[in-house]
Length: 139
Image (cartoon, rainbow, N blue to C red; front, side):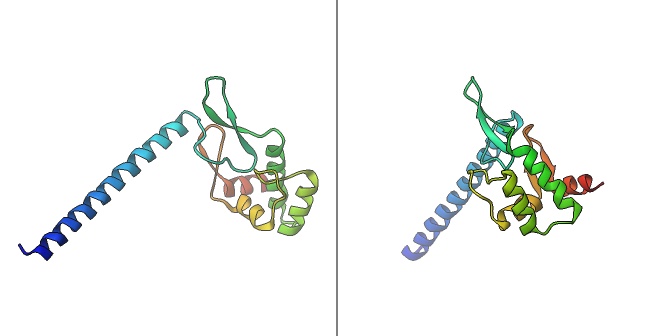
C-alpha cells in the first residue's frame, strides 16, 4: 500500500467511526428525551399557554399556564369563526393579555405559528393536533 492510499484508508475509517459514533449518541439522546416525555418531564421550551414547573422532588414538568392557557383557547375559538384576520385577532388577544412565552407582545408570525403548528405539547406529554382543535372548536 502506498503512503497516500494508507492515509486515505485511515481518513475513511475515521470518518466512518465518527458517523457511527454520531448515530449512537443520537439514538441515546432520543431515547433519554422519550423517557423524560413519558414521565411528563419537560424536554424543551413549552408552547404558549404552558409553563415549566419544578416539582418538590426536583423534576421539571410542563403544566398549563393558568393565565395564558384560556387566552390561547379563546384565540383558537375566535380564529375558527373566520371573522378575524390575523392582525385583528392579534389586536384583540393582545388587548386581553396574550403574550409570548417570554412575556413580550406577540407578532403576527408568532400568532400564525401558534395557530398553524402541527403539534402542541400537552401537559400530559402527549401530542395534540392543533388543526383538529381548530376544527372541533368550529363545530
